[in-house]
Amino acid sequence: MLTFESDLKDEKLDIHSDLEGLKYLRSVIDSLIVQSEKNGCEHVHLMTQEWGGPDAGLSSEKQHPDNQIFNHVKIFCWSENENT
Image (tube, rainbow, N blue to C red; front, side, top):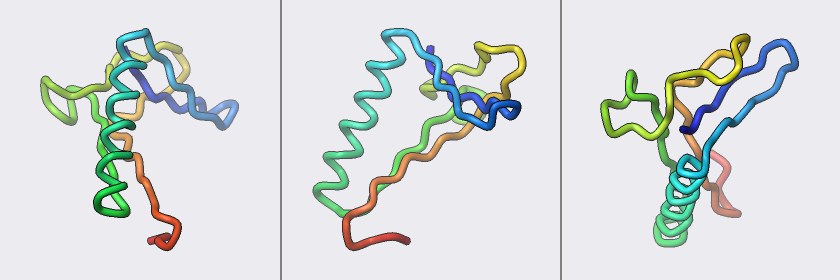
């Protein structure tokens, strides 16, 4: 389980996960690091099944009743010389 949720009341991002979700997130970030070291600026997309299909990595079941689920999370890695 891995969710990115918007807490509009407190204006914050909540990330909820179990151990498997954290391992998945770590593997995604490790892969992003490797690709960015080779190619410079890179990014990855994390999606719920509704947005990314059955192999998508994010859960669509929110963990806090007042939060809103992010169906699509994009993580960027910028090189020191790039900012666009």
